[in-house]
Length: 136
Image (cartoon, rainbow, N blue to C red; front, side, top):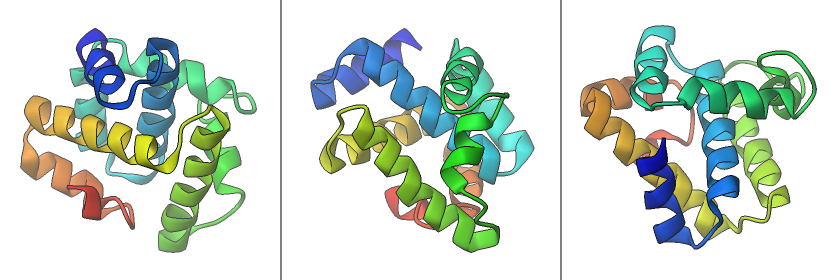
């Protein structure tokens, strides 16, 4: 986790604490929408990734996926993924990130994921989330 946090703080200028929260929020969103196996590998490849997901999910409304569920606001299917990305961006903006920083954080997570589990598995994850595949 520390390596990923350092990459994100260097690329965006945000604090390590906010970077870790953003990582947890984004990984939690991905966990909700992408194939379980590939996402599990991604989260397990980031030391502390599961802890960051759990910590930032509970901050938004209780339960393991409370924040992500709250973000989606009842949207379902493919539209839920796209609408969820917009809601996720709104929550990240609430943490003080601008759209450029949000994009950079997402790209850094995806790049790190490619290094850890390979580009094919990252593409498998991204294909299941509308809007995410354009970042790879």
